[in-house]
Length: 486
Image (cartoon, rainbow, N blue to C red; front, side, top):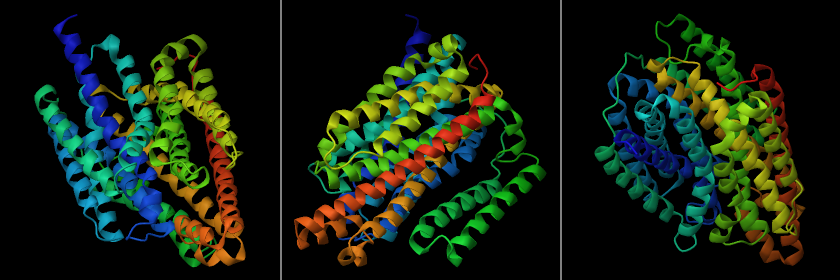
């Protein structure tokens, strides 16, 4: 084994570990929702959605300028800064005395994650031989997918014995240790001229935030309310402003004309849709297993093991499978499997045995492992090497914005359906699932059973909406996929 291949393998392991930490936080926080809901902070269901999505919005929207920043000033420095900011944000979140401070900590942590993500793939490709690049991208992609499930498992281990603050107190120091390893192992990143386009970044962040606000608050205030309609209108205007600015700017954050590249457009749609489904699953799954099944945090983390197993097993072979059966068959087949798994989960009840539940998770993970590596490779291969940071940022932004939208949509459906399905005696306490179930338990077994059934009915509606969106995206992506992978 040559020194170069050894260095490449060490970098692959280290960059994958960095990705696992920042993406695992997206999923791990979902496991803490029951403890957060019953904590002294007393967050409402809407505030819980924002606690999850505040991190993802900042993470997703700043990925592209963070990638450009790495191209411009050096990817290693940006990665180190990101890991330190991430660790500081975790410690700030752990010390939060109220929801507002916790949300601020989540925003800071999301900023650190945005700096980390694109730099990892750019540095990895810099040291990987040409013949190993497809394998490196597939492995890195598998790490991003498995990170969500590993975050749930790791979060379960922490939350089994510690309060919700323990999640941040454990993962923050892990990020700091990774920063030390990056300082010692990673090479200095190449530099290329790149525009940060702060106006474009601000417009993108504001547009996504406003869209999420419209979805989350629309479920609470009513879809036809003035607040919801004005928020959807504002989001559309901000997106139009972003496109207009990008078409005029000399070096825009994201030139909309690059979406004329079929492989890139298809890759972005497909990646966003798959993670839309996956993180909607993470948001609902932890609550279902703890509220409806009565699992402990540790048992909840263990119950989701079919997800990382399926992702890791299939992702490593996905490029070879796509070469054998064709990119279109591999990607669309994978996305249909994701939709089918989500649809199957819509039929689970408190009495459902683990085997059919685990098989549904395995379908989701297998579908993701088949589709995402080829989609991500298509995005990266559509741009020149000098814009690897932008390609990585776009790939990651599609994933994180899709994740944020998935959490918002499934949360909105869950909130609106849960309140309607509750018995009259509990409808006034529908602002928080945990508080509703606690109140129902005090009223007796019948009321508690009705409340749990109301939750699973609402969950079923959410899963069916999410599955339909993923299936539509698979149909839209199919024409842009060729026989051969990129």
